[in-house]
Image 1 (tube, helix red, strand yellow):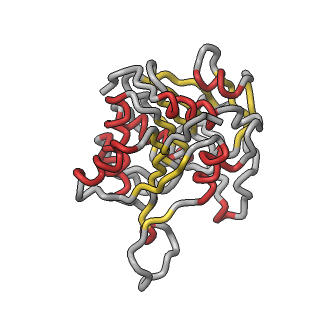
Image 2 (cartoon, helix red, strand yellow):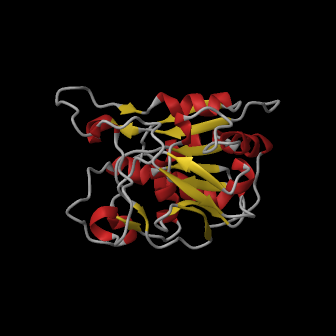
Image 3 (tube, one colour):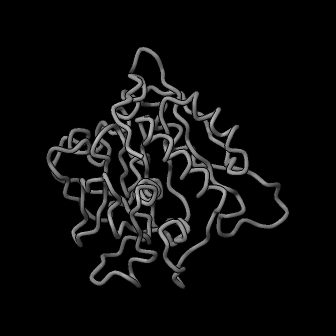
Length: 257
């Protein structure tokens, strides 16, 4: 655990953007507690970041106090951000979350502030660097494995869906200490075209990019959900610990924007 606990911002989601939420509930920002507990276990102080897309000055003041940014999983990214028409299988969208996370990702990349993207968060990292997404793997990508093991369809969130191969010489390989690991899988979108200045660091058996990272600085995204497993598990390793340690050091290694 770092001597000084860094402050990690964890972005939130609009409650009513989630499928099945009844009308009449107050407008709310929410997020799965697992992400908070994961960064706490690694020695950080977590803070939930509100979706203040309409108030960039306040959002900037919050960002300036953070030592790192974590973007969790969630609903689909609006394809307008990568200049693509909407596919019929595109899911629900959260415009305030899209805008807020794109802003935070750009700031973090520009400043070299440590960034960790999980599932949707990896896709945000790719899109903000000019990459694109498959809007539905089953419908758009020939030969794709099943990746959508959603809890709403009865799958456990820690179900190990498939293995990944991890590239040597990457931050992810350093974090997981292995060339292969089994992972869970709760997504129907995925990286199509890799963003500028990013390298792919893991792949599923069907060739889909399962992790990526910036060429410089600590900016890492993984497509699975490591927060569902205990530290040291094959799909987690020291990923959260390395992220928190980078935030504690105040890494400012690059200007990537």
